[in-house]
Amino acid sequence: MSSVGVRATVLLLLAVLVGGAAGWVTAERTSGPVVSDTAPRPVAADPALPFSPPEKLRPNPDLAPLSETLPVHDERVGTARDGGIVVPVPSGWERTTFADDRQAKWSLPDGPTGGYALRVQILDENRTVSQKVAVRPVELEADDSVSDLEILETSFDTLTASFVFDGYRRLTVIRWVSFSGGLVDVEIAATGRLVDEDGMEALVARIAQEVRPQPLPVGKRAQKPGAPTSSSTP
Image (tube, rainbow, N blue to C red; front, top):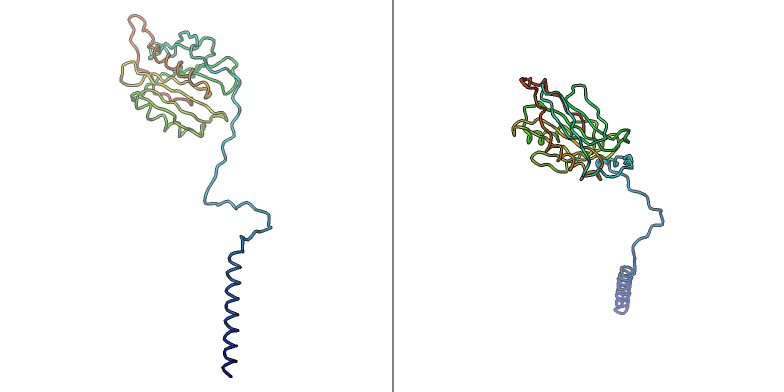
């Protein structure tokens, strides 16, 4: 091949290479993201990530928030011979006494389910007040009748918690009292809706301040109380 033919061949190859490179650069500059015309579909759930839907709650009854200044009157729980107490309770509320006569509950007469209630129990346990505060969250956790439990606040003698019971969101304020400053004697629990918190705290505080042992008849001595009784769900 002559020198002229070789030169022509080389120029042709260079032109091909330069054109290819220019085309690649142009394609890189002008190419956009690939757009699919397929309708979007939800991503499949990962079975390794379990999900529990929120619990469906019943609507709260249409009651005014519990008052912080309820009128009260004294009632007796138990008897003087077995360590009974005198306790101030809301006037006009209906009483339910438990079988052992060492625990009673008060609520509005014919009140709607999910309203507010008060429970007072005489205790005979080898525990101090602070120990009762510490153990009650464990007892609530083990109670199959409550769910979505949240301990909101604790102090040396009081526990406040929220939970779901019978389909209703409930709030409970529980306080323990020791007459001697040693072992616990009385448990006071008010339960209601979240909007009743101020009223329940005021009621529990008043009862804890005014609850007292029943006076013994002259010449009588208190008998040792029977075996401890378990606390019912607030």
